[in-house]
Length: 119
Image 1 (cartoon, one colour):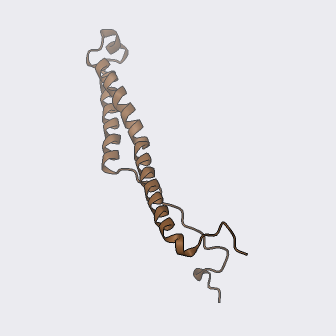
Image 2: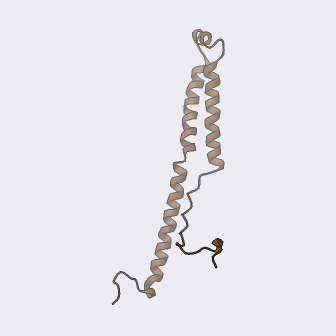
Image 3: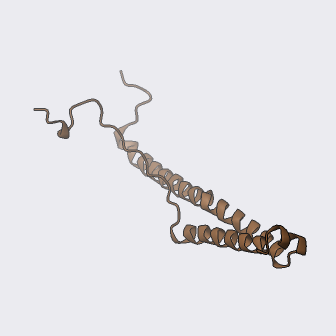
């Protein structure tokens, strides 16, 4: 008695090809998602935005702000440092793009392995 869920080996050719196309499409989408949600993009973008805001605030500080900071343009220097760090993250992301994680290898099972020295 044959199992109705088993496929006929003669008709498995097109199904294998369709499965291969589907797997390739999923791998491509996974790589795109990995690049899209790269944490370096988020961190770099936030540092650049906040760096620009703090740098603008530090370009013309009030006398009270300078007195509090003992004459140091702290907002300017902090803003420039944040801007530099954000740009570093964005350049790093551009030079070394994220790759999708590799598919896990299948485990051959509980049998003896060649490395175990069985025999």
